[in-house]
Image (cartoon, rainbow, N blue to C red; front, side):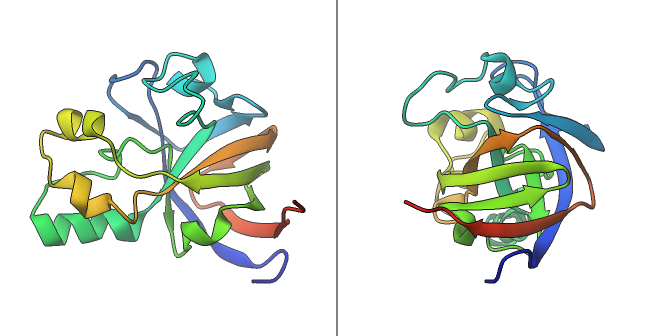
Length: 164
């Protein structure tokens, strides 16, 4: 992957005001450096994993293709917000963004680590099938490095690998 290569697009955006609250679709949202997406539980510090040193992230991403795979393999009627990730992407291998900086709309982010599904998600969805279904494709968590607007249809562009 070379710098500034278009890696995919934002298919949908979701926020929830509190942990376990229903996800609400948005056409656009403001990303806040070190916080998350305005109006989302993690930006407000009220998410299920807020403050957890292992599982706290500003923003979570998942590939639309992974959601489709779970629908087909397990016959689950999942909408794109069901996996409780903030940004659903198309055409990007999210795992390749871990440890790298990337731009989404006007915001700069850093991929932190893979974001597998949890038992809390299985409870909310009402099916444990989502756990093996998304075990290796549950998305990634990311940190917001600079404020910016993100909207459906925005490109996801690799900026560069982080210097360790």
